[in-house]
Length: 114
Image (tube, rainbow, N blue to C red):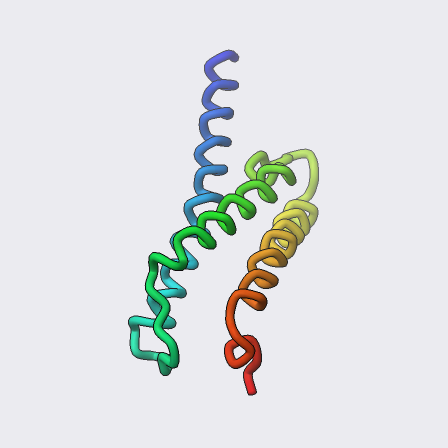
């Protein structure tokens, strides 16, 4: 029984670590798509070094939100719909902060699709 609890705790911590690493990977890929892939017209190049700190802040916030809402510990006593709702709301809450930061970080020309 003790081994099972330790295993569950280790898996939970690995999942939480994934909540930290996945946003870093996602935002790094989006930087590459924006500035290096050639898909988009680059108006003002931003080096990756300027994105490191904001990406880490967003990743910490993302991991904090998912950890606080205990998404890494599935509750088998509730239905899949309730679990999906918990994950969806966690995603909404976790993305409000990065969206607000990105809106304030860039100039007007980037924040509008006009």
